Image 1: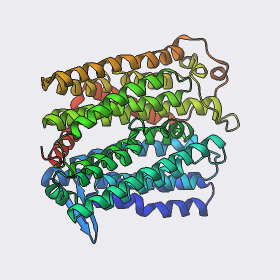
Image 2 (image 1 turned 180 degrees about the vertical axis):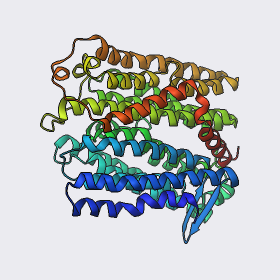
Image 3 (image 1 turned 180 degrees about the horizontal axis):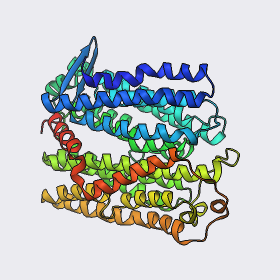
Image 4 (image 1 turned 90 degrees about the vertical axis):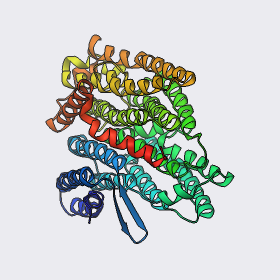
Length: 495
């Protein structure tokens, strides 16, 4: 069995064992987390072997009955981000969830979520792509609903479930149209057989809407701010840093199979990219709750990814695809760091005081740097990187997208790149006041009475903060992931 199959299988197979270990012993959370850690270590070994196999032999395919899995550069990029952020969230969640009921369900669901997202990245046919996509929705729903005894969390979870179900239903309808028209569900076979037709164009539209719910394409994004703000902070990091990106990978896989139906997929992605950038920034500007602000900013960053990918598909140049996927990686690192840093401050200021789950506002962070300098620095690095300040990671991936746009010598695309650059500047209108509040205001009462933070929460912040800085200074650090992924995507579209 290929190494990449073990990469998917290990966390999925261990999910029930982790749950049962947590249920059978006390303290449940400690045992479940300790059982999950070696599983992730073994999964990292499988990932390393999968990368080695890919470097030596190229893309690999594994078939078991009707299950078709294909591992290419795009699969490995999603797997790397999933494992990196998932491992840090697992470590971070120990003290964050201490004393909370149902921790064995949390760690089991987290393992399942990691496995299904890596499976989604390797799906080789439309039906199994939908199955992985649906499994991701179920696993993430259980995690969004972790605080289900609270009214706001329950509302957020039900909204997320309802919109995900509608999206999944539309995808399934699109799959039925493709099967009726082409007689196959294999992605490569569909790509060969798909010719321009109203039926397949309708299927593509259903894929854009259905997968677009999870990607948070505007105006399909309304679940996102509630889910991100009400979930545990580690899950907020996963939702923003990996789950919406996994939805984007699913959308790209489906549209690549229908590349022959129309040449307009690139233009469509660029239109949604512009809409997401503008809407995300404008909605974030008015936010006073920190996690909602970060959630809305994710809309904008999805926009940058879509612009880079759309440029690549429009002109058949891998530079834009590599830039868009490079930003996918960087956004996962930066947004993961931001949510974990905010979660650390929530833990210190609220959760240690009787499990108070009220939202953390910008005013609550006043003067946080005086008592929590490491967390303040981590949050500042994250949001300034998201704002595109050099020499941080966000600047480098945005710059690559902008360069790809200007290389086209197309006036409309150049105008779109200028619009994207102006949106990057606009984002500083809500990132900079956050940093200013942390460093330049008098400490709030909550900060003055806040508790100390354990190493298990600060270590992931250090790791992600260093990654954002290192990738910004040496952007070639992630080239081994971004370049093969960009080439694989362009090849899938026939470029």
